[in-house]
Length: 361
Ligand code: HEM
View 1 (cartoon, rainbow, N blue to C red):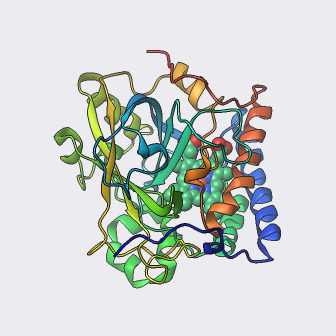
View 2: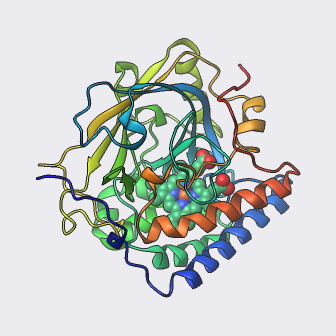
C-alpha cells in the first residue's frame, strides 16, 4: 500500500485542548517545584534522572527509496548528535524502582524551514520511549495520572518501589488489568534491563516530508542486542543503570538503527490516537539512519551540568517537515517549554539550543 500523503486536515483539534494543556503545565510545575524544594536543584518534570549522556554520530543512509528519503532523511550523510538516556519519573529515584526508559536524540546541522518556537536552532530532536504506543489515546487521561503523580512526588517512593516489585513479578497480572496496565506501569514494573539493549519508539507520529511516520530505535551491534531482555542484578544499587551502561561504553562503542514506519492507512494507522500501535506485519519499520557511539565515559557530572541542566530536548525542536502530529504531540509543546523554562530559572541558567555536540570527555 502506498503511504498516505500528509495534509494539515489529518489533525482534528478538540476545543478542550487548551484547558487540558494548561492543566498539564500546572501538574508539571507542581512536580518540578517539589523536586526543587527537596533536592535544591531544578530537574526535568519527567525523565529527571539521566543514565547516559553521549556524543554520537547520526548517519542518514544512502540509496533510500523515495518514500523514505524525506525531510532530514532526503540527504545521505553524517551529522553530530547528542543522546540522553533517562527514566521517566520526575524525581531521582533509585534504580531498584524499574521505570519506563526514555531516549532523546539531538541531531545537528539540519537544513530546512523551522517549526514554531525553534527558529534559533539547526537541530532535529527525536524523543523516544521503550514502549510501542502511548498509554492513553489523548492527553486527558494522561493528565489525570499526572495529577496523581504530582500530588505524590516525594511521598510515595516506598509505594513506587512496591508497585515496581509487584509488577516485575506479576507481569501476567498486569496484562489482566487490561487498559489500566499501561498507565500503571508508568509508575514502575518495566523489567530492569540494560537500557542499551532496549527498543525505543516515538509512540505518536510525526510528519515525514510528504508523508507521516512513527519512529523507532533498534539496537543492532551485537554487544547491545545481547542485552535485550536480560534482567540486571540491581538489588540495593542506587545508580545501577548508569554503572552498567558505563562499564560497556568505557571499552566498546555500539550502534542503533533509526527506523520509520510510514502511515499507509488512516484507519489502521491513526494520527490522533497515540495509544494504537500501527500493525507491523505488512508495514514494517525500515532503517533510514544509523547512530554510532564510540567508547566514552557515558555519564559524568560535567556532562550532566550541560545536558541535564542547560539543554532541552523536545519533539517541537526541529523542521516543519518533521512536525509532531496529533493531540498528544500538540499537548507536548507548551509542556516542554514550561518545564524547561522552569528548570532553567531554578538553576539560574537559561536553556539554550547548542550550536555543536561538544561534550567534556
Ligand atoms: C502528553 C504527552 C506528553 C507530555 C505532556 C510530556 C511532557 C514532558 C516534559 C514536560 C518533559 C521534560 C522536558 C524538560 O524539562 O526539558 C518530558 C521529557 C521527555 N519526554 Fe515527554 N511528554 C509526553 C509524551 C511523551 C512521549 C509520547 C514520549 C516518547 C515516546 C516522551 C518522551 C520523553 C523523553 C525521552 C523525555 C526526556 C527528554 C530529555 O532527555 O531531555 N514523552 N516530557
